[in-house]
Length: 330
Image 1 (cartoon, rainbow, N blue to C red):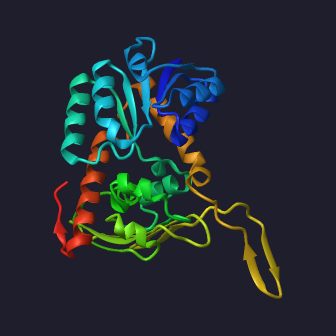
Image 2 (image 1 turned 90 degrees about the vertical axis):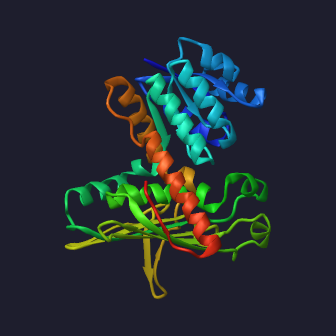
């Protein structure tokens, strides 16, 4: 049985604790949080201990940690957990600084501990199947990948100010997905950003509407569209066009019932937000983390995947601000 400590009892910590609660190979044995009462509440709910972060990392009976704390804390926690020999599951982004991510990866490599960057969308059943069919050449050679990701509404302005911006906070998932589907790293990037949803977001120095175009050495193109507003729900779609056909993963709806009458055809709404839409993906990524620790295989997405996604996010932000196309070397 793998004993896991959860660092951070907020929304994502609760998601992972719920997954671990029904797993037979692993269990959450301890929870910490900046707010002790929050740690106590989650610990009670999952029959674990509320401990300080320092106690969890120092406890030799705890094999791994899930880092679900604010991004600004990741650097120190990764260093501490690696030094203690713990396997590490880290929410994205690893850090908002590329150099600090490199330092984290060096520490992890030196310690020889497993490290996983939590890009959960790779584990979505539909997206994972789509990628497998690409690898199996179902549509021949990939030519154009189109990724659409739009939130129902913007997060609070306080979050916007500390998130690193739309490219590093929101689009980073899509930038990782682009690499996952293209099968090779992009060598060129261009981007555009606007503030069309909430003027306060612009005043905070960020965009709420953004688009990126990536190009690989083989000429493959990926187009990514992000918005902080979608009046019809949580919009998550992917289309891949290849030399022999097309693959498409559509939105997941609340149900599959379709009404047909004199007014036309009507389907259910999309899933309301990411917790519901990616529930299966969260379960699958945690199962992968546990399985890899047990069998000693290579962890994926790796720390290097987290680093490359951050490099792409930084480049996208820079392109959107100065309008210049940038070459990349990942």
